[in-house]
Length: 367
Figure 1: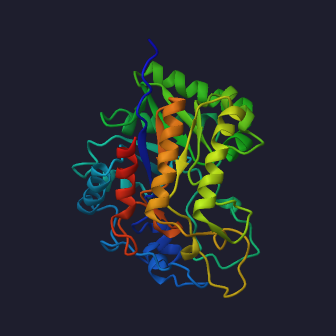
Figure 2 (figure 1 turned 30 degrees about the vertical axis):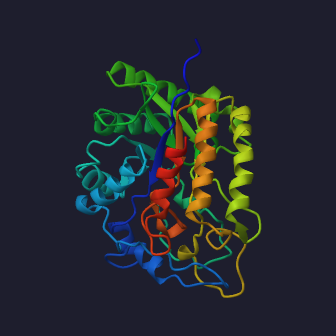
């Protein structure tokens, strides 16, 4: 008899940047966090839903009591696991306290399945962005790596996180994703990337740790045909919603429908399972200086997704769950639990209350 398809697990990305760090104390002022940007954002066009504020107020994500309240809510509404952004640059970490002191020290976080996404870009040191003439991605923020450094990263993860009983395994392997997989492959080179991944797997095996399930996030056309050969196991996205070079204002329903049509092609072009990611919205205006009527046509000013609501998000998540159940790959991602400065979050807000969380629960119950 054919086996029954698995019920996909819903995994929410977690942005760990809601506490001060020394690097930003120097760049901005002591105690700076992006809550200042979120609270200070104002509407920039008619009907612009800003500021978008948390219903339960701002919080410090190093505080296990605050984290517990939000993680418990997510678990109760159908989120199965949490994928934390992990900032690492050749041994240097930032924002680690959100995971180590907040999530893992909370009662639910100490037990709930979690995984890590290597955020191989360092945080911005100029916010809001005021120079529209600069590249979208400052090259100094990109994180270079090599065979030795990648091995050191995996060893650190294994010793501190893969070894935990609640680290998320997918098909018996420790799930780990790379945020900018294109830069990782382009900067390291295909041969070196393949060597780095192979040696990391050998080290894990030789030291009694589970093997990796390594996911490539948003591989470009340049590299998507190579991700399988270098050792990745699946392809996914962080936020896949607007057309990044499209109009400055884009409708949420149209965006989600268009992106859902594209999901099969990512698997076909990569030769790997594709695990979809859906988002409740997108608006990075808090990270952008206000130029009035002149809207620069690039991040963080543009695009802005409009017309989002919990009902449309529920439909998008239902589509992702149906796609994944048919593919039987096992995981669906939501971006994100708490990326308030980019307008995608499940946590309760002043516009819709518990609506985003209820949409997750309703989508799960509809399957």
